[in-house]
Length: 166
Image (cartoon, rainbow, N blue to C red; front, side):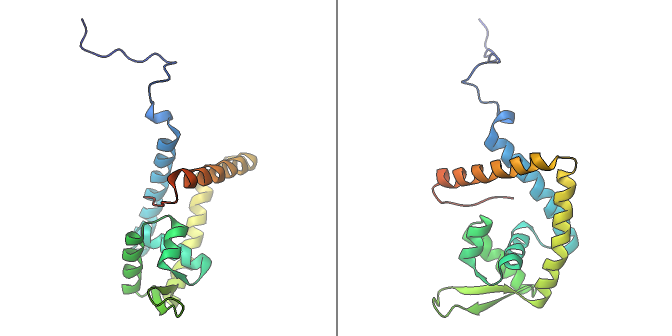
């Protein structure tokens, strides 16, 4: 009698093969993207992933609340708060009063933050171009469409809770 479990047969539907499990694979891809981008932003600007996400959101949309940033960037409010505080200390963001709701403030890029954003954009776009280099445009369009569908389905399945590591 053997004490080792039998390996599953190739067609066994009760075995989860992690390296083929789509949620895991998406997480791995996101991890590598965040790690590579994080290294670029850390070395060049001395900021981490949460901080560059805040800068990117403010650069794209302008003045936002912390709640808006969290929803747009899929970050937990605590992570957003820490990132905004760090950016404020470095003179990259500023807060202004929300006269409609005094419990929250609007956050925007300072002129220095806007210059940082202007430097980040070409680096991010070059990274994306390098990462997708050699993939046919029609396949990228299909991939983008599939990602959009999976994002919406994931949002629905998650029940509205949003947080991402990368």
